[in-house]
Image (cartoon, rainbow, N blue to C red):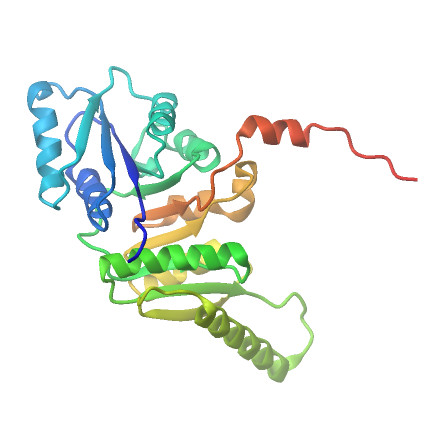
Amino acid sequence: MIAPLFRRVVVAHSGPTLDFGLLDYAALLSSLQAPASVQVLAAPIRGALQSLGTAIRRVFAARGVHSVSPRLLAEPDLDEVFSAAKEQEADLLVVKHPRELPDGRAVAARLLRQATCSVCYVPERGADGIGRPLAAIKLEPQGSQLLEFAARLSSAARAEELIAMHTCFRDTLYGGSEADERFRQENVLEMYRFVARANLYGAPATPVVEENTRYETAMLKVARERNADLLLVGASDPPLLARDWGAEQLLWQCQAPLIQAVLHPRKSPSLWKRVFSQPEPAFN
């Protein structure tokens, strides 16, 4: 029995009309393994105040999800969304892709750095299902956790293929073609060993090694070549370092839904601020 992926889901809905693409994708994720609760935060839509809750429930019911609680917010903003996620002890927050919002850059920056749970960013044209998810894997313990998370999701969605991508590059110009080939073979073998050691929950996984100095560029390339319909990355911890790993570039350019997976509860930003503000130690 695979443990539930998301026990409590919060969906942030905004805009003058009902966003069926966002709601349907949130329902799809919720339907993979029935969560304990789903709460949809929505601003009142003109002319549809009374029927809004019914419409939201209907979208989720079509995916077999019935434990949905619509909640109307007078002036929804990220602070209210974060507060609601904290109150619900949510482990997944589903939002519209910031690229489609007027203040998208600011929204993206806050979500990447301040969200304390996993976040799914849904573009206007979300996929009808999950058939070829792509996960960016680092060959380290956090990468193993992300791989197993992606495998659980793939298994629950009965995906056709889980694409596990590792990025590498040579930091020297010396060596020649033989050295280059040996470098690639070593990385491919290490990636295959890494995947073989992971619990894939029966999901069919394809290891991919891409040579590139930036993982986000490699991920976008592999996603296009292999028709990935969902991208998964591990969240930066501490979140203050999110810009360093190319999250904003990846988020802004990807065309498929993207999940920023928080595999462990994040430390609060205030704690990290206190840590980084401590004076440098003196050495003799």
